[in-house]
Image (cartoon, rainbow, N blue to C red; front, side):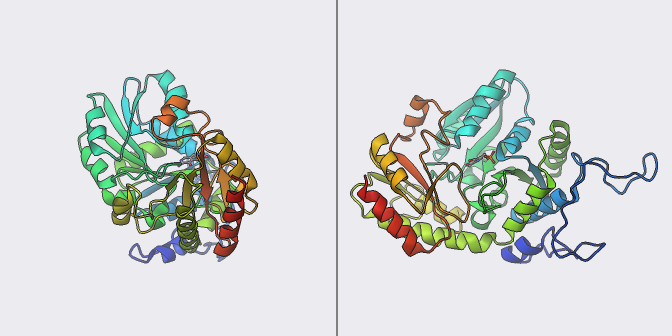
Length: 385
Ligand SMILES: Cc1ncc(COP(=O)(O)O)c(C=O)c1O
């Protein structure tokens, strides 16, 4: 049974890559917890030789994600950063990347402190300004890498505009779609070549595994990445793939709840004097609001607020009771993070502050609890500031 590619998002989330098991009829894809496969003779096998190269549970997740992003090939990895690593392995020494100047901190660290040692150079620009992206391109530029909405400032980049700039031979465009998820934004449909996810976040949705994925429409890129996935080897285990696959079945329902709750939290915070700046793309005064409305079908579940200084941010984050102070985001449970000292601690202060990313910022991953309880928690924590 194959899933109709024209079926609705929730139908594909539940069924794509998930046919009943051909041997037993099991409705949930089995966890193929094996490192290798018996071969019938030399060169004779059932299409499975060794689990770094092929695993049926991983293939189920890859097919599911490819369908949700409207791609042709999905490739899964042991973490979001392992997915970025595989993507960067498409490049070689001397190549140049133009990237968003506000992204997940680990992505900067990987670009500068790891691939910088192999001769890759990166220019960071405010990718919400396409003129800056275009101006940064050199004859050596091979990759435009953007995150939208960004972590943690929720800056919005025009993906169709990025795809247009990248429409030159030898130039690849990539978008980290972790914050939006394919339920709210599908970069491949806007012409982007590669979509990246930390499946650790909304796709899994339950904070119980770490994983990553790349999804592409182009066969040549898919084949090259499949080679790199096996050659580099940062593949996820089948159990983690199974957890992510179970997560995507409820993605649309969770995202509806995440963003309904986030909108209420943002509306509440917008009226509070102690909140110096507030970032949520659903707010009409957010600089990327009109663009987000056009290229996304919702505004997501992350709200970032500025409490003025480190002391204010610390007091607020530590006073929250229902929001757990922890790294990560996108699970059903609400989390609070202080990005400057946690998720983005590896980004140099000057580089951070140049984008308006100050020590007073606190990032809320608004979960799926009852909105009234979340609002009560935020309200009591503000008293502590
Ligand atoms: C937007 C974004 N991309 C990539 C990553 C890296 O993913 P992972 O932690 O699964 O390696 C993160 C992690 O927080 C993230 O927030």
